[in-house]
Image (tube, rainbow over the protein chains, first blue to last red):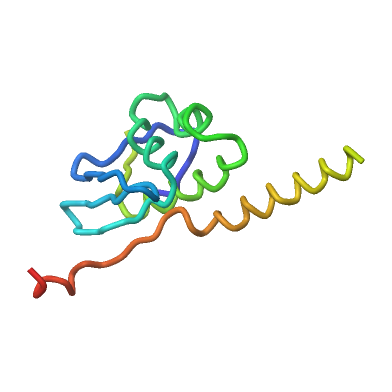
Length: 87
Length: 37
């Protein structure tokens, strides 16, 4: 299922994110994927997805406007990697 | 003058967005690292 910013998402329960200077490292304990999140606001966004009714609302709240498009594309990639999942 | 500065800033911002479009997420496989541990 393709990423739809109008839908609600959450960080996958089998994923842990370790904060780093460049952003964070996300590790999925189920599929053993390791993903670099190369922006601190992307880490905040992924951790906060479950608190908002849609990914678009989370983007508006967590990411400055000029970077929202980039972060939206990043979320699509993270859905493919199962770092996030639909609620 | 201020118009030129505004254009320059907008261009710089656009370039910044383009540069980050493909760079925010990078996935690596650690399957081949088992022998390290």
